[in-house]
Image 1 (cartoon, helix red, strand yellow):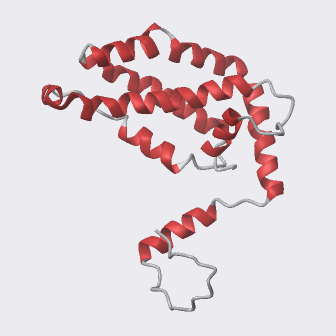
Image 2 (image 1 turned 45 degrees about the vertical axis):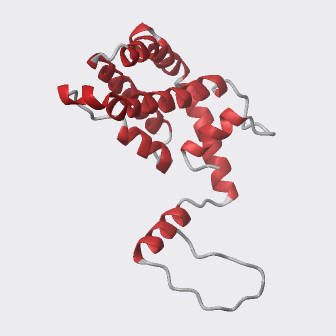
Length: 178
Protein backbone atom coordinates (compact mmCIF):
# COMPACT_ATOMS: atom_id res chain seq x y z
CA UNK A 1 0.00 0.00 0.00
CA UNK A 2 2.70 2.52 1.01
CA UNK A 3 6.33 2.57 -0.13
CA UNK A 4 8.73 0.56 1.98
CA UNK A 5 10.59 2.58 4.59
CA UNK A 6 14.12 1.72 5.64
CA UNK A 7 16.65 3.27 7.99
CA UNK A 8 19.66 1.97 6.09
CA UNK A 9 20.36 5.30 4.40
CA UNK A 10 19.44 3.98 1.00
CA UNK A 11 18.67 7.05 -1.08
CA UNK A 12 17.28 5.05 -3.98
CA UNK A 13 14.39 7.04 -5.40
CA UNK A 14 11.02 5.39 -4.85
CA UNK A 15 8.19 5.43 -7.30
CA UNK A 16 5.60 8.09 -6.51
CA UNK A 17 2.38 7.03 -4.86
CA UNK A 18 -0.45 6.09 -7.14
CA UNK A 19 -3.61 8.21 -6.99
CA UNK A 20 -5.30 5.38 -5.07
CA UNK A 21 -2.43 5.24 -2.55
CA UNK A 22 -2.57 9.02 -2.14
CA UNK A 23 -6.32 8.80 -1.46
CA UNK A 24 -5.75 6.06 1.13
CA UNK A 25 -3.03 8.12 2.79
CA UNK A 26 -5.30 11.16 2.91
CA UNK A 27 -8.11 9.11 4.49
CA UNK A 28 -5.76 7.74 7.14
CA UNK A 29 -4.33 11.16 7.92
CA UNK A 30 -7.80 12.75 8.10
CA UNK A 31 -8.59 10.50 11.07
CA UNK A 32 -5.60 11.74 13.05
CA UNK A 33 -6.55 13.77 16.10
CA UNK A 34 -4.53 15.84 18.49
CA UNK A 35 -4.38 14.19 21.94
CA UNK A 36 -6.65 16.84 23.50
CA UNK A 37 -9.36 16.26 20.88
CA UNK A 38 -9.03 12.50 21.19
CA UNK A 39 -9.48 12.73 24.98
CA UNK A 40 -12.46 15.09 24.59
CA UNK A 41 -14.19 12.69 22.21
CA UNK A 42 -13.46 9.71 24.45
CA UNK A 43 -15.08 11.52 27.40
CA UNK A 44 -18.00 12.52 25.17
CA UNK A 45 -18.49 8.89 24.09
CA UNK A 46 -18.50 7.77 27.71
CA UNK A 47 -20.97 10.51 28.65
CA UNK A 48 -23.32 9.48 25.83
CA UNK A 49 -23.05 5.81 26.82
CA UNK A 50 -24.14 6.73 30.33
CA UNK A 51 -26.98 8.91 29.06
CA UNK A 52 -28.31 6.12 26.83
CA UNK A 53 -27.51 3.23 29.17
CA UNK A 54 -31.12 1.99 29.45
CA UNK A 55 -31.59 2.03 25.67
CA UNK A 56 -28.22 0.33 25.25
CA UNK A 57 -29.19 -2.41 27.70
CA UNK A 58 -32.48 -3.00 25.85
CA UNK A 59 -30.63 -3.32 22.55
CA UNK A 60 -28.12 -5.71 24.12
CA UNK A 61 -30.96 -7.88 25.39
CA UNK A 62 -32.60 -7.86 21.97
CA UNK A 63 -29.36 -8.89 20.27
CA UNK A 64 -28.98 -11.75 22.73
CA UNK A 65 -32.64 -12.69 22.78
CA UNK A 66 -34.15 -15.73 21.21
CA UNK A 67 -34.76 -14.05 17.83
CA UNK A 68 -31.24 -12.62 17.65
CA UNK A 69 -28.17 -14.56 18.64
CA UNK A 70 -29.86 -17.87 19.42
CA UNK A 71 -32.18 -18.14 16.44
CA UNK A 72 -29.77 -16.53 13.97
CA UNK A 73 -27.07 -19.11 14.51
CA UNK A 74 -29.57 -21.96 14.67
CA UNK A 75 -31.03 -20.87 11.32
CA UNK A 76 -27.53 -20.78 9.82
CA UNK A 77 -26.85 -24.39 10.83
CA UNK A 78 -30.39 -25.44 9.88
CA UNK A 79 -29.81 -23.93 6.41
CA UNK A 80 -32.91 -21.81 6.82
CA UNK A 81 -33.47 -18.62 4.88
CA UNK A 82 -34.62 -17.13 8.19
CA UNK A 83 -30.94 -16.47 9.02
CA UNK A 84 -31.36 -13.41 6.81
CA UNK A 85 -33.58 -11.86 9.52
CA UNK A 86 -30.63 -11.06 11.81
CA UNK A 87 -29.59 -8.37 9.35
CA UNK A 88 -32.22 -6.04 10.79
CA UNK A 89 -30.73 -6.41 14.28
CA UNK A 90 -27.25 -5.80 12.88
CA UNK A 91 -28.44 -2.62 11.19
CA UNK A 92 -30.20 -1.48 14.36
CA UNK A 93 -27.01 -1.97 16.40
CA UNK A 94 -24.87 -0.14 13.83
CA UNK A 95 -27.33 2.77 13.75
CA UNK A 96 -27.13 3.03 17.53
CA UNK A 97 -23.33 2.91 17.49
CA UNK A 98 -23.18 5.63 14.85
CA UNK A 99 -25.58 7.81 16.85
CA UNK A 100 -23.32 7.59 19.90
CA UNK A 101 -20.57 9.56 18.23
CA UNK A 102 -21.74 10.94 14.88
CA UNK A 103 -18.75 13.29 14.87
CA UNK A 104 -16.57 10.34 13.86
CA UNK A 105 -16.70 7.92 10.95
CA UNK A 106 -16.92 4.29 11.95
CA UNK A 107 -13.87 2.07 11.51
CA UNK A 108 -13.35 1.14 7.86
CA UNK A 109 -12.88 -2.57 8.58
CA UNK A 110 -16.06 -2.62 10.66
CA UNK A 111 -17.97 -0.80 7.91
CA UNK A 112 -16.71 -3.27 5.28
CA UNK A 113 -17.83 -6.25 7.40
CA UNK A 114 -21.24 -4.66 7.96
CA UNK A 115 -21.63 -3.81 4.27
CA UNK A 116 -20.80 -7.39 3.25
CA UNK A 117 -23.25 -8.84 5.77
CA UNK A 118 -26.31 -6.63 5.38
CA UNK A 119 -28.73 -5.69 2.63
CA UNK A 120 -28.90 -9.29 1.47
CA UNK A 121 -32.09 -10.88 0.16
CA UNK A 122 -32.51 -14.62 0.07
CA UNK A 123 -32.66 -16.32 -3.30
CA UNK A 124 -33.13 -20.10 -3.68
CA UNK A 125 -29.82 -20.25 -5.61
CA UNK A 126 -28.05 -19.22 -2.36
CA UNK A 127 -28.65 -22.72 -1.05
CA UNK A 128 -26.00 -24.03 -3.46
CA UNK A 129 -23.37 -21.74 -1.89
CA UNK A 130 -24.83 -21.41 1.60
CA UNK A 131 -21.63 -20.42 3.40
CA UNK A 132 -20.70 -17.82 0.80
CA UNK A 133 -24.03 -16.04 1.24
CA UNK A 134 -24.79 -16.49 4.94
CA UNK A 135 -21.47 -16.39 6.79
CA UNK A 136 -21.05 -12.65 6.11
CA UNK A 137 -24.49 -12.07 7.66
CA UNK A 138 -23.47 -13.74 10.91
CA UNK A 139 -20.02 -12.17 10.84
CA UNK A 140 -21.57 -8.71 10.61
CA UNK A 141 -24.00 -9.57 13.39
CA UNK A 142 -21.17 -10.84 15.61
CA UNK A 143 -19.08 -7.68 15.12
CA UNK A 144 -22.01 -5.38 15.82
CA UNK A 145 -22.93 -7.48 18.86
CA UNK A 146 -19.33 -7.28 20.14
CA UNK A 147 -19.32 -3.49 19.93
CA UNK A 148 -22.66 -3.25 21.73
CA UNK A 149 -21.40 -5.66 24.40
CA UNK A 150 -18.31 -3.51 24.97
CA UNK A 151 -20.49 -0.41 25.16
CA UNK A 152 -22.67 -2.09 27.81
CA UNK A 153 -19.65 -3.38 29.72
CA UNK A 154 -17.88 -0.02 29.91
CA UNK A 155 -20.84 2.40 30.08
CA UNK A 156 -20.46 2.61 33.86
CA UNK A 157 -16.85 3.76 33.88
CA UNK A 158 -16.34 6.89 35.99
CA UNK A 159 -13.94 8.22 33.35
CA UNK A 160 -11.61 7.07 30.58
CA UNK A 161 -9.61 4.18 32.08
CA UNK A 162 -5.85 3.81 32.33
CA UNK A 163 -4.52 1.26 31.65
CA UNK A 164 -6.87 0.59 28.79
CA UNK A 165 -8.98 -2.60 28.95
CA UNK A 166 -9.03 -4.42 25.60
CA UNK A 167 -12.79 -4.05 25.19
CA UNK A 168 -12.73 -0.29 25.76
CA UNK A 169 -9.83 0.00 23.32
CA UNK A 170 -11.84 -2.01 20.78
CA UNK A 171 -14.75 0.38 21.16
CA UNK A 172 -12.40 3.35 20.75
CA UNK A 173 -11.07 1.81 17.53
CA UNK A 174 -14.62 1.74 16.22
CA UNK A 175 -14.50 5.55 16.23
CA UNK A 176 -10.82 5.92 15.26
CA UNK A 177 -9.97 7.15 18.74
CA UNK A 178 -7.02 4.79 19.15
